[in-house]
Image (cartoon, rainbow over all chains, first blue to last red; front, side, top):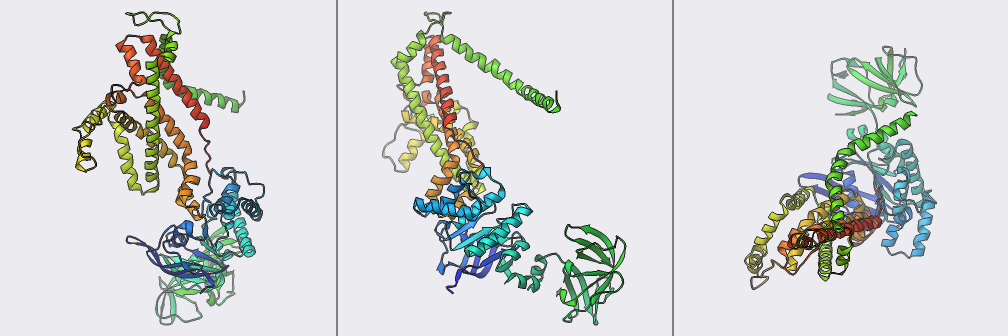
Length: 348
Length: 289
């Protein structure tokens, strides 16, 4: 038990009839990086705010370093938050921003100066001491926010979608930086995002949230390859969806066309939704290269930079297929799409 | 002429054309009048005429030496400072509440703050006449609540003049402060608490510095209003309380000394102009993230 820096036990947050956080139980180990992943309104930010002390639970217990902190205000919790906007103090310089938490903790001035300088090195911003936040770029401001939280050496760092407001290149750069800092400094962190790429790349474990509940919490590869629910599967990445009915040992689409599909486990009779990632499909012109195959027509080709996306039609079914090299197929060409049965997931 | 230069000239012309009507009005109605008052202040005075065309400094000399005028100036400045300070403190607390509390408070308080601006100064004075005397509303409420044992009269006291002034200028302080406070990010308060600051430290370190500009602006505006309001202190205050406004009225109408009245007015305009210049220099720069 003492190995956990943060424990949430059946934590609940309710505003009148609205349940924002619904009996969430989770533990974060010392030095662990846990991400709360979910769409907006899934309760991930509310959960983070409960841990930070900005909201107070209507039920359950929150423990930080083994100590219950229910009702304890934010300024008396040993957590530090990195906000989406950075929330830097606009009237204070970079150095004053970073020193703020230390000054509030009455750290001697000499040590403050030393630790601020050290932090500026760590976030690669030496020489920026006397700048004001308005004189910096979004990425630089977010580094200062990171430094301001790291410098107080909190038991737990809380990230509230810190990369969401940045453009793609900067987002990837800062994401790598956070990963490096976590490896170097070994802090414990709860990271909130709606970006599954961020979640997968940064985390030791990811908790997928929906409607105030944790749907699944697992290591990133487990989550991606063995999603526990349809929601987790569809949220972890783009997918093709085939609506089918199973009856008399045959799988048919909704118009009744027979689909020659075989799954690893047989399916019980009834309506099913089959899912398949676009990258798992293989295209060939004459012979199928995998066990499950459908004869399709190319309806559209999209160029997406590092790959091509083929949109295929097969009777009433629509499929997307990603391939890295352009094939000699144009719109209207006939093609065979094939895939392994193991790459398909069935939900009903 | 290059395109860029032509465009700049066009923009400048458009700017002045758009400004022209209000500028013209300002010159005709305001500047011309003030110029007339300045000219009048240098005229001579031989009763029973209101003034004699001349260029003399007599009235400015009187301004500096007449103990009655000095007393009025002292009263006006003290009253204006007290009222401005009180209104800014009250307005600050109210804007803080409006800023931090849920939306529904906001409309209520803004509605209440608009009330004094919807009635004329004279009708508000009539209102005070119902509230402040011995048999007025306030006296009844105080006796009824047991706070005082005997009916009290507050009308025609310095306190009444102060109260009337505060009431009259409070809305200006409030709206100026609200406009400044509304531009601040409330998340900064959470960030401050998150870093270990107590609510008091957060106020001192974050809220006050970020809104200090509003405090300075609101105070200077309130001071100017309090300085210039004439009817309220004269209708609610005691007969012994002379303000500059009353002094001007007395010289103008009571003694028919137009040049002296004008000299007092010029002195007040100069004082306000000086105040604005001083406030401009102490006004902190705004830094936005």
